[in-house]
Image (tube, rainbow, N blue to C red; front, side, top):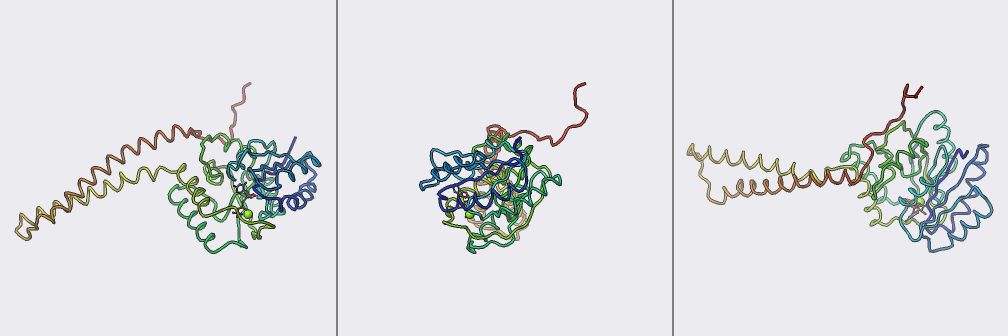
Length: 311
Ligand code: UDP
Ligand code: MG
């Protein structure tokens, strides 16, 4: 039985793939246990397809899926998880920014009993200040808004136990960010730290637009805050308008103040806006419930059962 599956999304990685293979196979071979490397060619336009087919021809432990077009790294990772047979599955980038020797440390942690091992980046070479700053902002914001324990400073370089893979595959949603789903499923998680080197060849595929899309996929499926925000705002505005209105009435009755028509417009317009926001918010809560139904995530995930065996 295959013990380890390495899954590798690859998009236009012709210069990295052989180097990746040469770096990973001796290390995995040293474990003396069965392993497979699943490359998912995400609709590359360079020689990636040919190189992967050659590797698969020479080495039967190399398995390859070619996408019909570019579906994105998250789709490629999903495909890897679906095709993997291993008891432990390790997701790695093809550009050697996820050092193979760190994968061995992850395996050690897995043998100690951890179900998820995150690769945590200490230093990140070759990344702009902008990328680091936006990534840090994304993690802070997403943790706050979703309330999930999203692992800081880690991408998709992780080891997953088979039961975690199965739990993630039971989440059927279309828009997905694997690292957010990993936080959602729970289980025993830990991390190993590493200094992230520069790409071995080629350039990053992540433009600002793609990063924004990724952030959306991390945030929106994991919180209904965006939909319930108007009702909170509406209630707040309504309360403020009522307080303002009562204050004006009291001041006028006590002959302390008599504001002109313009002053009375503030609580009136505020109250009207509050009504609109609350109505919108109620419709949104309904939408959030429908979204949850459509998303159809498991209602809970059991980690372990005891004494349930039938006699
Ligand atoms: N990748 C992919 N599809 C894409 C973009 C990237 O499969 O549309 C792969 C890419 O080949 C690499 C990994 O995802 O193996 C990470 O991509 P990249 O190195 O460009 O991201 P960065 O490390 O700069 O965040
Ligand atoms: Mg990279």
